[in-house]
Image (cartoon, rainbow, N blue to C red; front, top):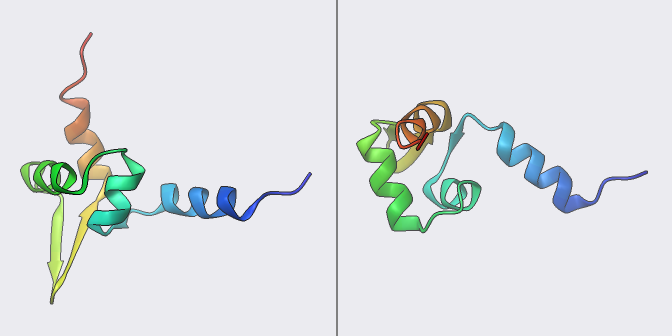
Length: 69
């Protein structure tokens, strides 16, 4: 059984620790602006020159704070 290109690309995206805003929005099924807001609130954003990267580990811990029991 083979893997399609989409499956491989999706696996790679999920394995990344740092993502750009657009990748993060797709990964977490959020709109771009909402992802940017939440990433900044979570203090998960790293700015290198003109590139902003979001740390997925920090962002996911922040998302867990919204968990409804």
